[in-house]
Length: 213
Image (cartoon, rainbow, N blue to C red):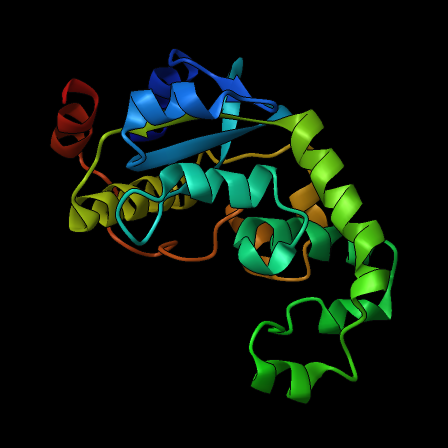
């Protein structure tokens, strides 16, 4: 029996898809730099459809394009939770002890004083490159454009994430990179999200309003 999990996948599989190198100007015109993104990953399928692997938004207004750039174009994982997640998988696969230092903050003077003896930016470059390569080769996204109100963006984000996580239909491939994440929340949810997993899923009325806006 089809339910919200099916409807979400069917709808976003039929939306325009973007991948690297995407045109920033086109996306800016489409979204007015506000909205949400829905990520897909090569090799991930659900019932003949491309499987959604992440839902994302942005905090401040007019920052959607910058947020996508943090994921796709930056080589600094500390500016992207998504890049952090992927890097942790590669470190875990390699059984690299640097995994315990990967998420250390390292921006402010105080952070550098505290964590400087652990953080090796030169060493991190090889993993940053692996993360970038994986994203460029395997990730694509659809857009929910022009959602200007942050409260509404947050509700859409949490509703979609919790709908995906709480479904008994959720599935991933045996080779999905997220299976190697040290945090079981990623492994269990089968998406690259750890926030909003247990929040209120979208109901059919909310979903209808989303796709008809």
